[in-house]
Image (cartoon, rainbow, N blue to C red; front, side):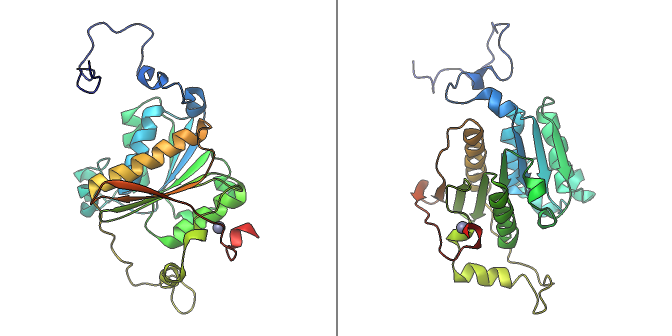
Length: 266
Ligand SMILES: [Zn+2]
């Protein structure tokens, strides 16, 4: 019988005593389940991507999952962030706190801590505590900060981004692979500069609102969480840059070269 069409998702009448909520995951021999359970994972950004990553990883119950986000829930988040509800929006609850509490409800085995603060105020000493750091943020400036601090600390960094029907995932494994900053061109850096005023302080004008499609966010966030699981299972040996096109449902892999002007490799 085709396993995809078999009633495997139906409740089984005879559950063996050795089976628990993780028994189906343990059947995947390539994964190091013990390594996953003992890992410490940091998720920066609890928006559309972060919701997906936090949900997937909470089901594994790593040793520690840390959620960092300085933003608060509003009604526009409810269209793409399933971990938040109406009361979170009404009270403008911290995204990090709301997502962390829902993750604990999803799996009480999961130890979750939240940092409702700007990730750019955290340096490499903070990120060096983790097995892997996952970036789920819109801001290029924040992604550059995560990338450079993780690279300096030697911690794997998984960057994710969405823009409408397009998605992007990059796995950075320092010092072996090129990094996120290696992939940026002049226009990217111009957009970073636009986040600052002429005096170098943060500008007060709003940044561009990124179009967000729930299924694309789900796909990109799921790949990010899978890559994290592969890293702590020692299955991911090389870095990668994946581009997802939601129009064709094609995932393309690109080779990333070290940039001779990237400051992270000097
Ligand atoms: Zn680089």
